[in-house]
Structures are given as structure tokens and as C-alpha cells.
Figure 1 (cartoon, rainbow, N blue to C red):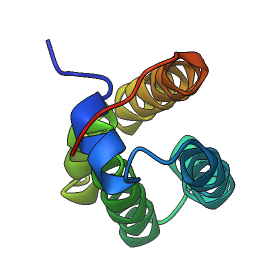
Figure 2: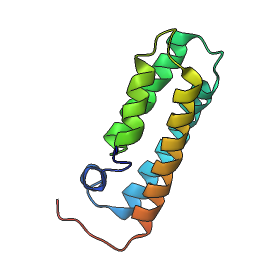
Figure 3: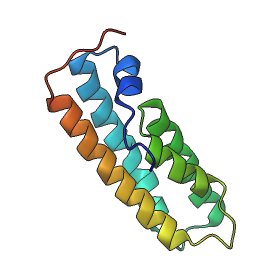
Figure 4: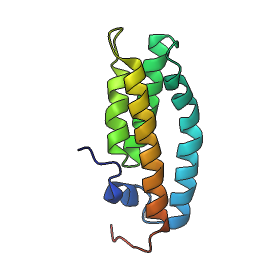
Length: 114
């Protein structure tokens, strides 16, 4: 089973700074909206759909969203034979899991020495 959130990677990327973490998660959610919309549009041209997967993959991977990044990599390399509906549903599900994981991590009292 793929890890939803690599919390060590996230905490290191954000230098365990709670305020910065909240800001970066807000930015991630805002910047992901367009890509998610495009991925949900099964009629979108395949190159645009693949580009949306690429953009979301990079954003997710940078913040430790490994499951989402892995699914988005599949979208990035989609072919006309790809079941875009199933993949889009999996991506949206992984995105929702990641946002829940971000919320849980941001609400937890912890500190990581990096």
C-alpha cells in the first residue's frame, strides 16, 4: 500500500515551521484545483490531461504526497487506452486522503528535529 503522506519529507520540506506548513498547504490546495478539474474532465484533450497529471505529481511529491504523486505519474504517461475515469477517481480520492492527512499533521502537537 502506497503511503498517503510521508510526514518526515513534509516536515523537512517545511522546516517543521507550523505557520509555513499552513501556508504551503493552502497554496497546494489552491494550485491543485485547476489540475484536479482538468483530470476530472474525461473529454479534455489527452496532452492537456497528461500535463495536469504532471503538474499535480510534482506538487504532491514535493510535499510528501507519495500516493497522489504515484497516481499522477500514471496520468502523466497516459495513453489513449488508459482508463481515464478510473484513474481520475483514484487521483481525486488520493488528493482527498492527502488533505485529510495534512489537516491531521497540522493539528498534531509535534516537533521534528531535521
